[in-house]
Image (cartoon, rainbow, N blue to C red; front, side):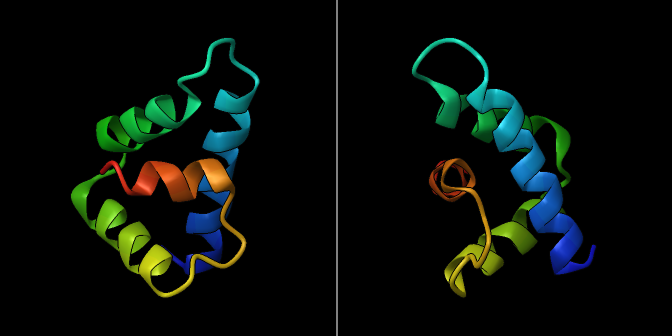
Length: 67
């Protein structure tokens, strides 16, 4: 997946869970990424975050540390 598409997809997930009640949005984003992204996509996200994570939503950045 292109980095741009990955960032857009991850940020859409964060936007959705940001609107949900509760204080566990980071856990929900991490759970969604674990459940619905294949291991290669999660690895790509981790590498992207490690290289700076440009344009990623803060929820995604926090959730990536829990993968």
